[in-house]
Picture 1: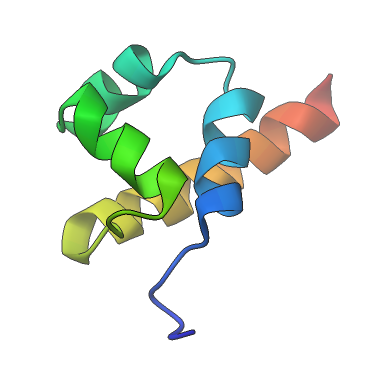
Picture 2 (picture 1 turned 135 degrees about the horizontal axis):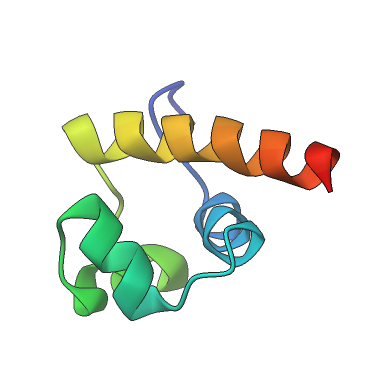
Length: 68
């Protein structure tokens, strides 16, 4: 796997740690819910700015978890 790729499990965990539905998560990322669903099922993979945003959110979800 390339460094800029994320696994389906990573994407789902980020969303769940932020306590967001797929619809809410998609709105935050500026994509449609179907796109998030496809990422989580492994049908498609996020690319470009979506990967960068997911990495940022991953950092925020880790901080949120440790602050609780």
